[in-house]
Length: 128
Image (cartoon, rainbow, N blue to C red):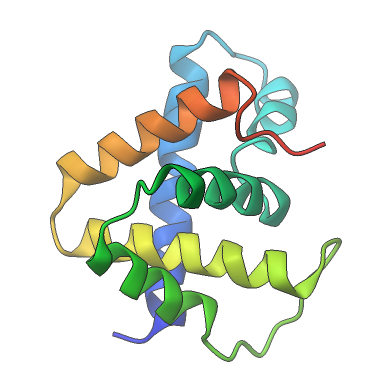
């Protein structure tokens, strides 16, 4: 499957995981959930998250392969409200999560999502 197709599904499952997490944290108002979700779900957030993942050596070789497949994919859309490199990193993150989801690696998917939640909430992977 190509990188953009993986990113398409990855975007959806990643977003659902974040929304579920926000509900578990006690957010009930949609506006508050939307505002808080930006720390997890945006090109800027993905770039900050990826930087910490890379520094921690968190991703496995096969995950990096799918990240790169998404990051390097030629998209017909352009970055809105952010730099192109952050947009491409975001696409890479989404492709990697799409790969994990479609290949049935839900334990690893959950492990990475829990790491992201902790990294964002403790401030290690927050963008300003």
